[in-house]
Image 1 (cartoon, rainbow, N blue to C red):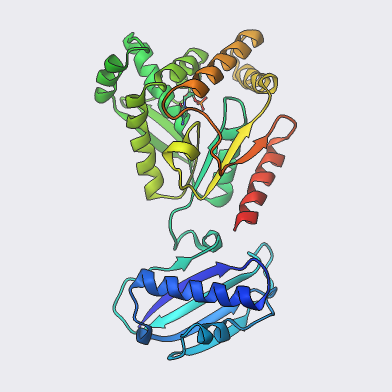
Image 2 (cartoon, rainbow, N blue to C red):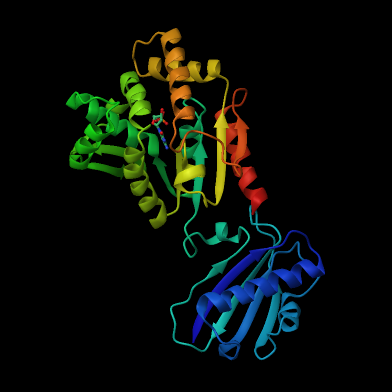
Length: 335
Ligand code: DC
């Protein structure tokens, strides 16, 4: 006997919605596990206490699951629980490795059991995306992948080698030899270039600008995107960058595009650098950011732009806490 789990959410507590959701959930469990209906011995449903209009067991019988025993129960109210959620547990007479099925956002409940969750956060420099991405990743206990750090490492490599950052062929020759590793120490991303931790070095203004130039080249991007997709395909993560929602992961579960006025973005970067004890000129920094915006938005291949299905957040007048709360609420709304 094998147990398969599943869950889904409904838009409203209405009979037709419950019937539709239960039918969809059971059929998906059947399809994804290659089940014959007569292999299902029993199904136990539980629904959250905000569902009253119909018994999921009755909906299952009406959907044609009449040859097995069916049972529904109501769950007590749990603080912070997902609203309007129906769970199912199928007991199956078949020797298989179960594929649990979590639909319509219910996968947030059991990320450990379900498909991988990818969250894309794009936006220009200083929009707050990396701070927000780190916070979301920590809250969800998933990985944070800073894709900008990868382009920055390429740029550092090019600068150290004295390569021409405009010359795509020269760069690719250099990068083929390069060993770029992303490692995590206590949940913090470390960028390791040819065996050396360059996490701090890649934050220098000259590296920022060179990263924007280097990342214009299609072959350089393809090289990095391959690595990013490989990581995102293996585990749940929040990725921040310029092209995550549009190019790297067009099917990401959640997409956000963060922006802020150029003045605010430059001020944030300035404060960041001063805090690190670096001497920077505000006006120069502002000009550099504007140049980077221009370059990142106007390159031919995978430029910085908002994906059609991304949620736009103007963070100019928001605190980090407000942005994080907004993003997390939007995710809840979608599920
Ligand atoms: O996010 P950041 O400031 O660390 O990025 C540095 C540069 O790298 C940015 O100006 C453009 C490039 N980049 C990119 O083209 N695509 C990404 N996904 C991330 C960064």
